[in-house]
Image (cartoon, rainbow, N blue to C red; front, side, top):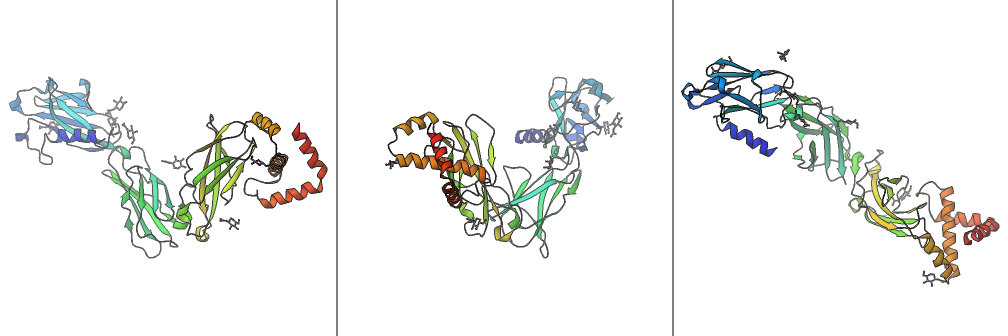
Length: 393
Ligand SMILES: *[C@@H]1O[C@H](CO)[C@@H](O)[C@H](O)[C@H]1NC(C)=O
Ligand SMILES: *[C@@H]1O[C@H](CO)[C@@H](O)[C@H](O)[C@H]1NC(C)=O
Ligand SMILES: *[C@@H]1O[C@H](CO)[C@@H](O)[C@H](O)[C@H]1NC(C)=O
Ligand SMILES: *[C@@H]1O[C@H](CO)[C@@H](O)[C@H](O)[C@H]1NC(C)=O
Ligand SMILES: *[C@@H]1O[C@H](CO)[C@@H](O)[C@H](O)[C@H]1NC(C)=O
Ligand SMILES: *[C@@H]1O[C@H](CO)[C@@H](O)[C@H](O)[C@H]1NC(C)=O
Ligand SMILES: *[C@@H]1O[C@H](CO)[C@@H](O)[C@H](O)[C@H]1NC(C)=O
């Protein structure tokens, strides 16, 4: 885009912008740098100084370097050639399209930048979020097609709901278009009114106003220190642990977590939704001897009693681990000297199988359940033995 802009400026240096004096120029294109609506028609003319000794019928026009057909030209006088474009397309770049008048050898005589677009429409999809309550970032989308083809300014404005004065966000993102971050003088417990004003040389428009409380739109960093490890020799399980986001450690809130995992060779993530607010979870029903990628994210719900749904953090970097091979488990088992070890392992396996049937997701998996299971098992020692026997074969 920058290169294109410079290109148009080079052309402009052929004229002294503003005052166009025929006497100081070999040629001039009219109109200079017009701003036009998409679909409109334009008649431009290229006037050449009589001293040049060039006839208008030897000239030709280019638009963005492409020669335009002679059928669009009209010789108005020996020194004046006009061009009519019907149904203008939007500008290819916001720095304008280059309309250039050439002599028969192809030398540039004069040029003009065409800015073709549309007046802005109401910006849409204005949303805001706050990372750890330390800022307020908002993004939106342009409301209409064509307004982005000419230079259009978007201003994010805000005020505190009851007594604030109107302010403008200053920290527009350089990496993400249509976004701005309010970083100073943030108020918690007071609703903000936020809106976007769009303007360009064809018009202006204002988005709907959104009203929000920072505490209702808090998101946080992805959980750190995610580790995935085997659960003894259990071939269908992996244990996932992570740490709560440190940035929110001084806040009263109830984090919610989500885990997703996938096979190494697959792109389909499986999501565990109801992990609750704990910082570890067990994945079960996995394939033996298989590498899994695991990610965790956090939703800091209920900061200072906010009732809103909260905003999920990014996913943590993927952590990989593999489940044990079932064959190896078998051989390991037979070699294993410790009866109590293998018994414990079996019990654990059995317990987890039981949990799968009796609990919903990770959040309910706890020692309480384990105890309940022990009680259940003690009530029916036969079942337990049978299962253990069956497991051995
Ligand atoms: C542009 O020119 C075409 C053909 O000459 C005409 O039909 C159309 O109405 C014009 N459009 C505008 C916006 O003037
Ligand atoms: C060339 O012709 C156009 C269209 O008639 C006219 O507007 C313009 O003033 C003319 N330019 C000169 C320098 O005479
Ligand atoms: C607009 O674009 C279409 C397709 O690229 C092209 O055929 C047409 O000539 C263009 N119109 C103008 C006025 O440049
Ligand atoms: C207008 O701008 C959009 C993106 O802003 C671009 O995709 C489109 O190609 C542009 N139109 C033309 C005719 O170059
Ligand atoms: C605005 O959001 C809606 C719903 O998420 C989406 O369908 C639409 O494409 C978005 N509009 C723009 C211009 O991004
Ligand atoms: C998790 O939630 C329970 C209630 O659902 C609550 O008692 C506990 O304090 C919470 N723990 C954390 C670390 O937020
Ligand atoms: C259980 O296994 C561990 C290592 O896997 C071993 O160090 C320990 O001695 C075993 N316990 C018994 C009672 O065999």
